Length: 53
Image 1 (cartoon, one colour):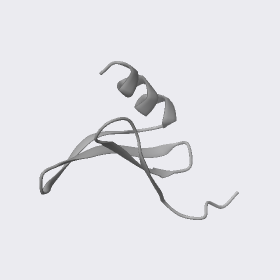
Image 2 (cartoon, rainbow, N blue to C red; image 1 turned 45 degrees about the horizontal axis):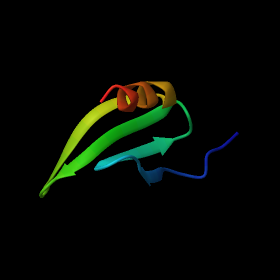
Image 3 (cartoon, rainbow, N blue to C red; image 1 turned 180 degrees about the vertical axis):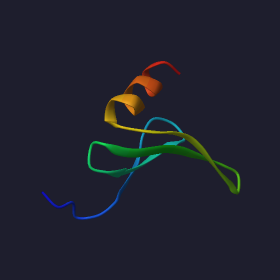
Image 4 (cartoon, helix red, strand yellow; image 1 turned 90 degrees about the vertical axis):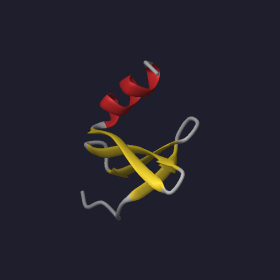
């Protein structure tokens, strides 16, 4: 199956996610004028991280 592109979604609080299917996700947040990259992983990695903050 071909993916239609990259998705961008706001998660809880200041966290955002860039995704390409279930297996490629990057979690980040904005800090003023800077972007702080938190984690790269799959859907479960992101979910587990957010559950433990």
